[in-house]
Image 1 (cartoon, helix red, strand yellow):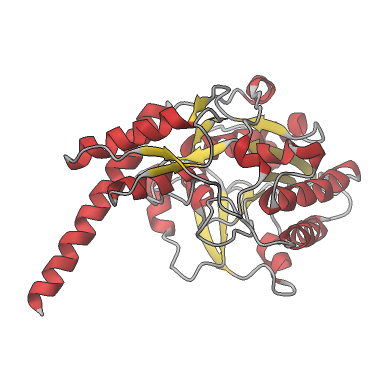
Image 2: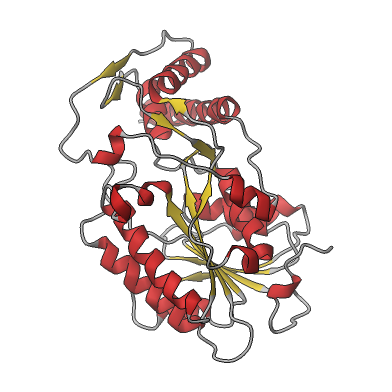
Length: 350
């Protein structure tokens, strides 16, 4: 089975190239591992999560036998020397690790986290610097929000991405790695096979609707977003690997559907789908005063043109917004119903 990934295999290992996924137990990371599990490669799953990473579940995406050779490396990348262990011998790294903040906001991050992000990227490229020979590939997950406000980003999360992007750009120019930055639009949906629904805005709104709460907007609903399904995002990272020589050093690459939707209309669709799956009346969609932690990016519609990335890699999104939304709502309502039933049985036993 030829995948185009053979040139990544710098050691000519018969098992295929070694691809390390940083942040592998995260929302996008679990989907990326699921995609890689279908391929004849070695995958090092790097996670600091306390929950066991189900490598067997990820490998199940490839069938009963599983195509990939998966190993799990549980480590805190902020610990001295941990990054070197995580990427040792890697032919390629998909860097999805990020500092995410509290539950109040779906994309918040602690102030000053850009310094942590830059330091982590420096550790990664430093550990990958193998001197002579073909440099390893490094594909980094960023956000279209990083293009706002003159390149400084509208908030802490975007700023940490920008800081890491700059480190990777220097390392690529110096020949340390073959780096590529993918700037994703708003990612949503259910990640398979792990089943994660993430912490995005549509997940938050679905949870509110299931709980019978109004869906709140910090504007009049005219702000637009390009919603990219998590499985399509995962496939983009895998698609970038065999084309790393074409995408490296070309500046950040926009990855999205290229189509935007008004948030007011999308939230109304969420309310209607939850009503359809629960049999209740749709919750209202209302405008409210923005909270203090809102930033300028919440009130603007970021631009995304994925045509260049599509042309170079052949990647294209497959999951329509409506289809992804229906799957998300169906999964979340089913989970809520199961949890409610289990709690009721527990009370009865008592």
